[in-house]
Length: 191
Image (cartoon, rainbow, N blue to C red; front, top):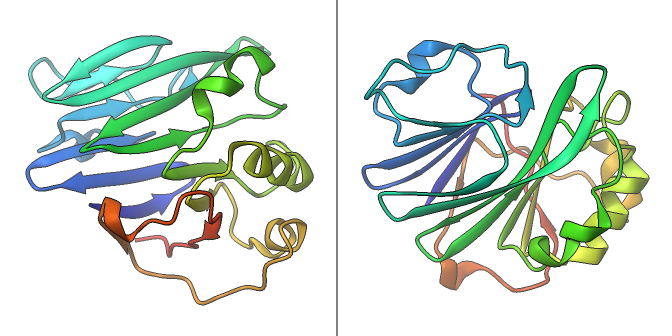
């Protein structure tokens, strides 16, 4: 599996011919994608054209070509609906907190525990604070943590008692490469 960071909260998750996009920022991204997930409404991107890819923008349960996506409401703020997603893709679970600006609701915490990969906003205001992000990471114990919505993750890393490491162009891995509960930070370069 390959995860690349496109900036903001836009990620491309790819394995073979299957591709999941998280918060794509332009319509050109949809070409060749299997699923596109939008974590905040109203979206800054128009939905894909029919048959381009499967578009998910609300909470619920979805399955497309062996990719399972579950979404839970993270609440509404200033007429903006926010959704947390868990993607199960080739036996790898990926939790995407998206544009979360307050602690995730306690009633969905049990569904988010022990993910293989957690994509978390790490830049502080207007998103969740670095301390809240660190608390959530400790509660859920992911194998890998990928920060988003930040250009400088130093404060986020400090909350987790981690030192900055060089940013990687992409994160390439297999399930067997992951250590459950390791909470390893992978900072990715914007591609």
